[in-house]
Image 1 (cartoon, helix red, strand yellow):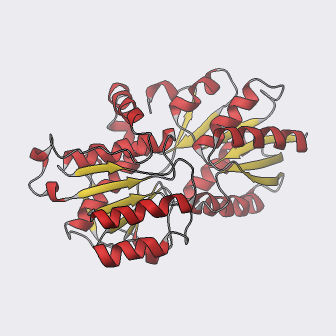
Image 2 (tube, rainbow, N blue to C red; image 1 turned 90 degrees about the horizontal axis):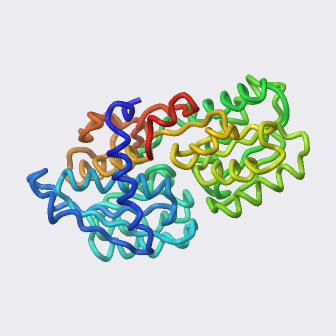
Image 3 (cartoon, rainbow, N blue to C red; image 1 turned 30 degrees about the vertical axis):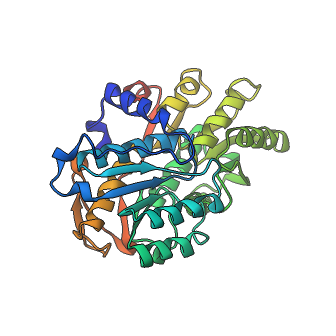
Length: 347
């Protein structure tokens, strides 16, 4: 996986700490003043990042990657977003970005369809290039989607991990983000099929939603374990959810009895791996995801690509990428983190 060779712990720690100031609604960073030497034309490119919500460590890291890329090509970086992960909360920021005439909007969508009207208005009236990352909208509402990895690969690795950890049999549940989250829903559909096809002795008893909120996810974990006393594992395909589930299990009688896995960041999950609550989880590098999305946005603004299948562009330290079907660019395969390697990463 590409990020293994390009990040040191020290660098990642500095980048992640730099994101801590980017948590207020509508916070802004202008990256153009001290990085114009990186590119001859990047100063004309203004990129606004709109995550699902601010104050989320995952998006703090991905947006820091976006800021790093924009600084490299000498553009102007801004981060805005709602405090809670709702589609209504994102609409006003899309409208403001269009009114301000930003070159590109890079967003992780809280709903695949609800944002389409505002996004298409921004594209049609202000020529804003729209790049989604992490969670997509309908393909006709954006120019490119930068995906963490192939949906099948993400879903399969999560099923494989839970199967290995519970001996390929028993009851499991899924603790997802919001019910309308495009990416989680796609992964869950593939997980269900994979379980049916390849793991007949594993029973998926429930799918619940923590709305990417720590306390809600914590409470949903408690409810699952009380409702299903024979539950052997929980998959949480969201960084907020897996950390909340692990936090609950780590101080309960379920520790060592109920497996927790899914998608998380090393810094969130380190203590739970070290104390034995979590055996293994997976993720891509969210910093690389934001970094790639910013370079994709620049390529669109500069006219290097249109988002058509077969288009290619350079993404700085990550190298060259090609646009696939449906205007999708894939970062790479997910990586498994466990006690043997977790201390090699800091994000």
